[in-house]
Length: 410
Image (tube, rainbow, N blue to C red; front, side, top):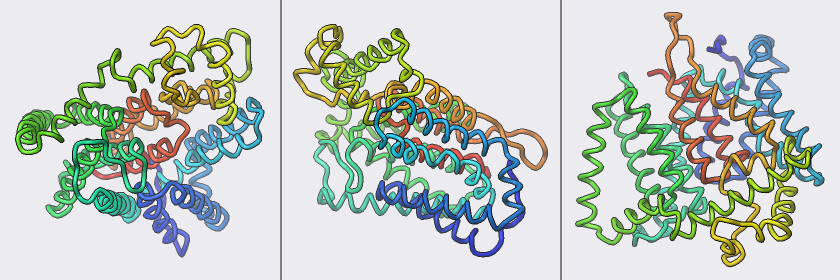
């Protein structure tokens, strides 16, 4: 684990404030997320220049060079693969959290920075919760509930991410009653918003992540949670039949691949994306390895669809033409990232984040203790099956939360 003596002077205080701002921004504004990350990068550069001990600690850490190398590699590969200059800036913007992984791990070794991050996400969520509920006049009919600060899909993504972040922390032994109550209420609030959003991918990802965490560490709680969920569902069906029925049907539709349009459209989009990648690989196109870039991917997938794919489609032939979805969005981070950023960068960053999420950390007794960040990794990988979140702001937030979860004290 990264260690460092107590930070000094103004920059560490600014760092704490910026960590709070970034955590708060997750639920409030995408531009504010980017701004706070840029400010964190700036404060880190200043500290590297002025603090020799910090510079030595950071530059001596292999994780810093690995993550920074991935950032540079992604930008360079897109610059080579794409025909559009703007794609270079797009890639840099979407992956600029990578060089900050090691600085965040250093920052989170201090309790006040961890508290700043947790306070930021909780305050940010409840701010967005109030704005969202007010926008809907504090009622819910059962239809999909979009956020006041995010569209309906991304609102579900961040709410599920919050549940996965806070659930393991709820079981910390030294947690005060007040703190435990705040965590429980926040998880319940995020759970309601997640169900109301109707976002099935985030719901499935969060459910699997929490299931694996509980079955490994809290098996009795898993049984109690299952019983509570069943009782709650039956009670809700009696008191709020319309909302309960809508939610249950939405959950059931996850496995309906023949009649649910959003499901078979996703399958058709996956088929289109895979077919384009296969073609690029077969003809030896460098873009298979290095990526088409964001704008390049949009152009290539649209041209491929209209010139070739629509004549050979097997999944609901004609569905994409009839329903006119955005064929440039594969609704799958593995396909989307490979098309935009190349298979080399995509595979490398998935290995990097996997090792970051499942590796072990040293504790004072010099033993190795598994940390609680693996549920966030599970959520990210499962949610990525149906959402294009790499590279994406959700990818940056995953790095932020995994860095935080690696350093929290159970």
